[in-house]
Amino acid sequence: MVKQLLHKAIAGGRLDFAEGVELFNEASLMDLGYAANVVRRRFHPDDQPITYVIDRNVNYTNVCDAYCTFCAFYAPPGSEKGYVLPYQTIKEKVTELIELGGTQLLLQGGHNPELGIEYYEELLSRLRADFPTLTLHALSPSEIDHITRTSSLSLEDTLKRLVAAGLTSIPGGGAEVLTARVKKIISPLKIPASRWLEVMEAAHTMGIRTSATMMYGSVDTIEDRIEHMIKLRELQDRAEGFTSFIPWSFQPGETPLGKKVKNLTTATEYLRMVALARLMLDNICNIQSSWVTQGAGLGQTAFAFGANDFGGTMMEENVVSAAGTRCDITLDEMIRCIHSAGFDAAQRDTQYNILRIHPRQSARVHDTLSLAGAAV
Image (cartoon, rainbow, N blue to C red; front, side, top):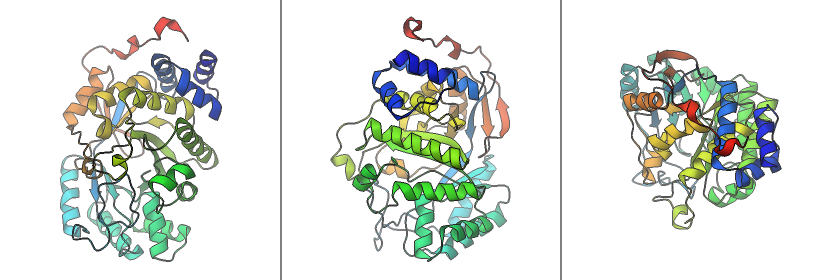
């Protein structure tokens, strides 16, 4: 049955929930990788490069009243450790980004009860005025929902005002795993899965592009993860707008949840997740590997398991490193990783438009990937 399912995916057939679960549980890693690589080639032929974006992650505040058990970054309201970055500090960080050829600012923070819509409008509008060419990839669905509540606004009015102030696109943070069971355990005070999807659907309907994510490996099951993918796929069918999907594993480190969860995920499991995402998400063009949480070597390996994008240079990362995981990489190292995997490297913008290509100097090596025993 596994071979038939892999052939179905390779031929462009849509896998259902039970089929996705069976493939994760029963297919060999190499067979999954082979099939995912074939499907990747349908979206991105081998003469197309692996892409990356030059960006910076700025956390404008760490004050948050969501108290997620998987987070070691937040400071509760009233804490001496809490901060809201002055605009001048943010401006200096973005200036550094622009000087390095950056095109995207990933702007995210906590659910700070002291910040209403006016704060975000001023911040976005000042950034837009000072950096008119910069893409403001800002405010996750949970932050947007938080703004609607603190400002007593409808979702539609909130989105309209943020866009008018300069919001360009929305990152997919805060999804974790989009099932009620998982959300209730790891982030009960954050928006439920249904609201995350509602925010994204409203954004897509308004023409705002977004990304989608999954943080797996906490209390979730394989069934939870497949349900998450199917919910994303169904939303993309209804209201297209997701540019990419980025899975990464839970980083327990210094988090409250990490003290309880001992079943850590593996590199093999990560590659299975990337490959399965490429097979299941037949209407999302780009699958991004996560060097931030998995490291450069495993992020590079994911190119042979369906990924076609290496994500951002980041320049600054606080949330994952607060949990005790820190993977640093320079732009030159990113390009070398892509080249050594046998691909050209290309700088892209947030919407995956190619800005600059770095051709590789050696012959490609990724074509050597094949199935054990030519099973498919």
